[in-house]
Image (cartoon, rainbow, N blue to C red; front, side, top):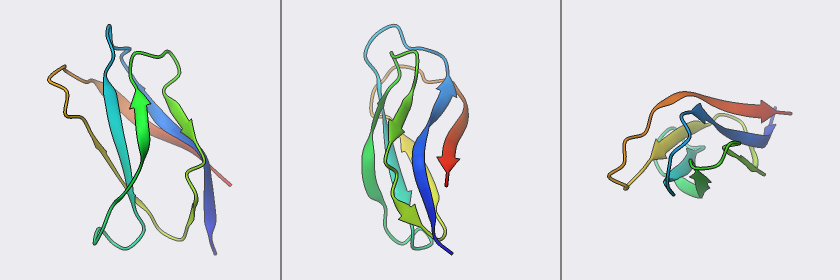
Length: 79
């Protein structure tokens, strides 16, 4: 049974200046990751749309910026 991730994002502090959070998905048990997009942490609403379909998925979040990032959770709307 395949699922569809219609919307996804993070809950956390709003950055004072531009700070991108890279979002990657793995649908093959961590063998490879596909870059899905960047979430701008300076925005009030930190979400992206169109996460695609999958059976089982791992999510990796990373930032190359030297700014500190404090997140409370990853959120997703699954259909």
